[in-house]
Length: 297
Ligand code: GLU
Image (cartoon, rainbow, N blue to C red; front, side, top):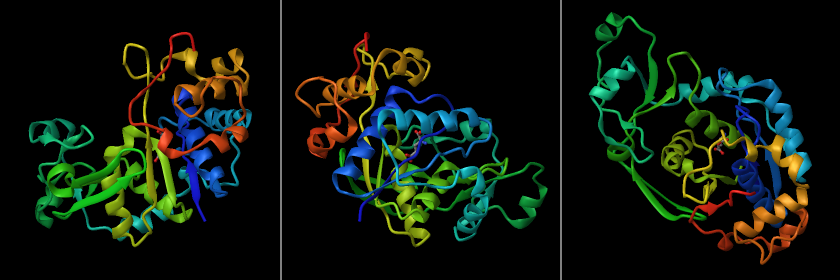
């Protein structure tokens, strides 16, 4: 059975971009008669706010995007992450942000720096001399991860030359998103991951973690970004596109009707419920091009 999930971060009110991702994740699962999970990613204690958690659930209900199970909040899952972390080939990294920049190799595939390996082979004595709390990196092999994204097609990334050893636990003790997402989706039995295309570049390292932890690898669908008419990415700062404003200006059906039409799911933008869209949904209607949102949305 298909098990899908929507995994929003409660760092702000839901935005039109999150609505789009949630809609496609939901349609994919419902059109296959699968199970939908809600998994709120409150991993980062500094950026997550309790008020947004309740707002997320309320906004999804208003949209008619229901879920069958809610997974535990990430803030309660440190023991599970610790267990997974212990199974990984990790080492402590003492580099400061500026040291990382100085020693940086070419950009890795997601725009972050490729780690130069400075702390990879420190001796125990060298580690003991360091005076700061380390972050922890996982040692990646010289191996190419290949997968076929359900929207973006065949992808490949060499872990050593395009990704580099990456952080799985930050120096403040918080486990990294890359590790948490794999533990949580693995634990939830998730078979398909639908999320924004900004995370396409994280997928190879997550597949490496799934394999290293002996968890089944889900299928991935990365959905195109929403952009303004000038081609610029819609930012969370555009308040008119957050759910507080969208709910004032649209009914759920009117909102979904316009969004579904802009995304190429339907032939017109007439109001439609999420449930009614299920029949019109097919992944091959979703292209890789960014979806342009008119200024008067
Ligand atoms: N929490 C992430 C976001 O809101 C999505 C992570 C994921 O779906 O893997 O962008």
